[in-house]
Image 1: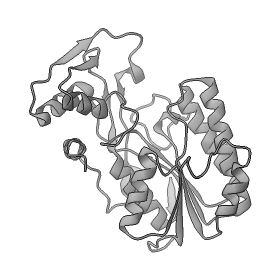
Image 2: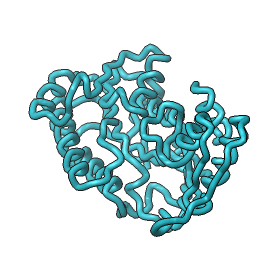
Image 3: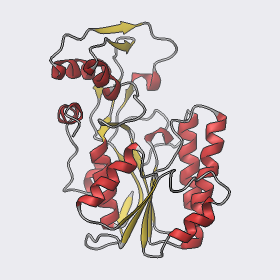
Image 4: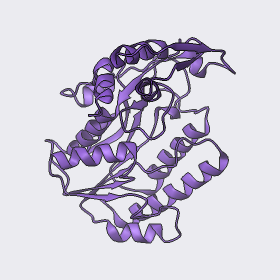
Length: 291
């Protein structure tokens, strides 16, 4: 689903990270700094993407040789108002990109663009999201494709975990924090749902590789492995060295994704054959150490 415009890996003249203060944005800034790549970091403090002047300001900051990583979003989307605000945000970004004509754009999307079947999911799976969050990311992809008019890749990560996650979402991040605090870990149902989880450093590394290769197309950022939330909770407790109770709770409503959402990551392996995903146990250990 992707191709590389650079025949050999080459760093961009400058990388512009839109949304640099967020979970993924800060990870890619750190990765770029590790290789001394010139970087312009744009967080909300530097640029309010909902302001009427945002597109003009952003267009004035961009250069034709820039590679842009667009990660800024208001997420997760839980209401029509949040969806509307996200589309205002992306409208300002794509308008600026259309005027600046940069060298390369990486849009950070989400696996939420896909329906639940058929399984395992691939880049060819139907993009019929069942949530406002997925609808936002699909609309965002369409907007970039229709208006940016530059070499473009959509990267679609699945559930991301890591020590600095600000959302405290159900799963590795919340379980680790509860264990650190000595509090019970409460599972939805019996924690039997099986999902794919990817470490934020792996997401940053694949963004970095896409920059070096000037990759275009669409790619799922997925490990190809699934783990139940119950097993993740047990692993977190074992690593904590504490006697943390794991409790089940009555499930309210239908089980998300029918309890099983695997991915085939063949395309990712083919695109970047030297890259290896962090095994979940290692990723949990790294997050626990706050590395």
